[in-house]
Image 1 (cartoon, rainbow, N blue to C red):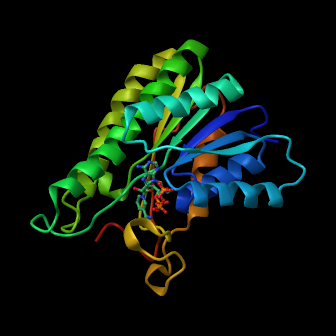
Image 2: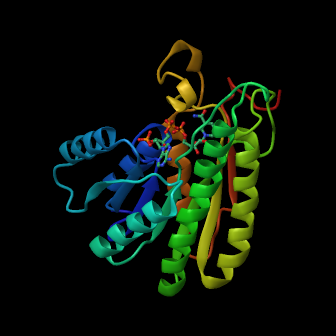
Length: 244
Ligand SMILES: NC(=O)c1ccc[n+]([C@@H]2O[C@H](COP(=O)([O-])OP(=O)(O)OC[C@H]3O[C@@H](n4cnc5c(N)ncnc54)[C@H](OP(=O)(O)O)[C@@H]3O)[C@@H](O)[C@H]2O)c1
């Protein structure tokens, strides 16, 4: 299988886009550790994937982590290294969003958004970079958004957080490319998940990208030859163009 022997961490790998990424990596032979806060949802996904893939010798595990906290992120990476001794792939998918006007946005929503979306991506990338630099290889894929380039008026903090993820990812790739570590950024447009109070499968989301569309992009990025790096992918649905 394509990812036999590889170890991957997928933050936010229990639901939405991350769930599809986890599923594809696990089906293709990788050992996958899902990191998210809700252990019931995460453990259920582990059981579901094990049931669907009875012949797989590779592992899928859930580890409870709030990526906004440095000690929890460190504990996640220790867990993965204790189990698998290396990390080939980190997919930073976890994020939160609050969509309202500036005056309606509370400071705690501002802090939470930046702590999870930007801080969590930084903390996980930092721990992965330490391991990958010592290994001499690895691939970090961060999730931005169409809102890494374009703002919406109900997005006073989500959009800044995703602009900043794009900037951070750019810096990270400048730092790590020379160390043989790939860094990529995926920027989805509207996607049918339960993100920020949306309801996956609802009529309102009809025509949006699916988690599987984005997971296919991640697999494409990871499937390039050793010398090829996909720097950025922005995707949107023909039915939900971001260029409005
Ligand atoms: N859906 C869209 O329309 C859309 C558009 C553009 C970009 N994106 C981006 O795509 C990525 C995936 O979004 P999605 O739609 O799949 O979202 P989702 O369905 O809401 O899933 C978010 C995932 O992140 C986890 N998570 C949230 N806070 C966390 C924290 N503090 N620590 C660890 N895990 C945490 C959630 O699990 P727990 O709740 O258990 O923690 C869940 O697994 C995000 O980066 C998002 O910004 C989404």
